[in-house]
Length: 133
Image (cartoon, rainbow, N blue to C red; front, side):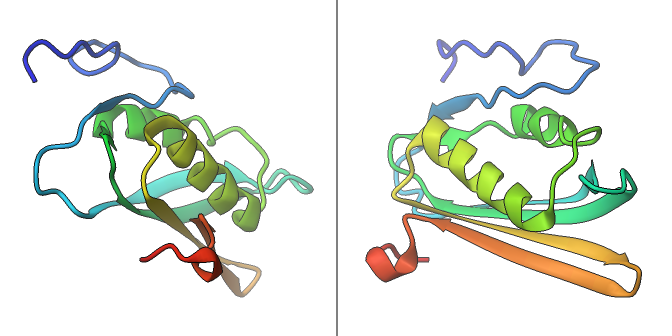
């Protein structure tokens, strides 16, 4: 691991980034769960702020997601308009594209605004197509 080069980890970064870094999956790791309850975005119609909790679960193949890059990636949604459902789909697709896990499931739970809380779940590949979670 010492020879693995990170562009973000170990560096001073003070702004959001849409870059996810990876590292080789350690032997015997079968499932990774990443939780963040500090995600914010904007309603794409009204511009009002939304607060979300994001849970990312995946079965790694060759790579895992480095957590500092994930924190900066999630921060990048702060000034972006996104419905809860599209946020879960986008994060799942980005994780899948970057680390090529066997499967990924992303659950976004948006805190209540106007009395309505929303939870959206995206899975790649879809469970009906034979992936496990």
